[in-house]
Length: 165
Image 1 (cartoon, helix red, strand yellow):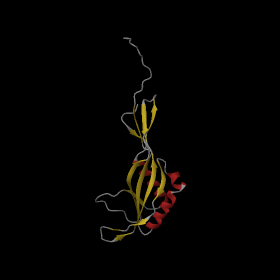
Image 2 (cartoon, rainbow, N blue to C red):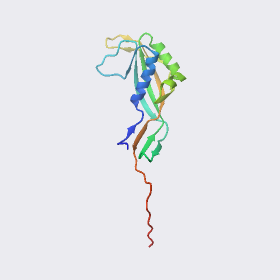
Image 3 (cartoon, rainbow, N blue to C red):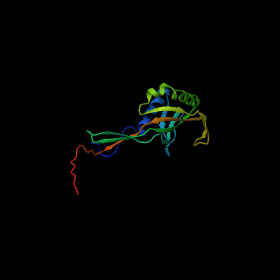
Image 4 (cartoon, rainbow, N blue to C red):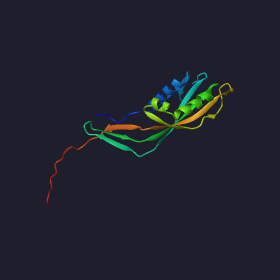
């Protein structure tokens, strides 16, 4: 019997799979999010940030009487921002956008599936030394079905006694 609610696939799983896909495409560091007081890696590198998770459908329910559990899931869309840094950032971003809409990405992602990617855009930034850094960005959209399993009691049989007035 399940104790509490258990999530099947998590956002950590999505980060792990997207990172693995990007590492298969590029020989550079791929990091999750920005951290305060932590310097960015030396270019080239990629930074991943989940921006939003939106429900795309109402909840679905599945019941396992023998296990005394119920599973609740729903279709969701996740938006993940990918920032590419370095001299080859533009080419890296374009390659990612192109392959995101291809079976290449579908075959590599298991806990989510790619929907589409926004066009890559040039967004240079000023680093801690007040120098411009080459940065290209895109937002990739993923289909994701989070599922939580929880304990559920079921009635198998009951006795009914009618009382006549």
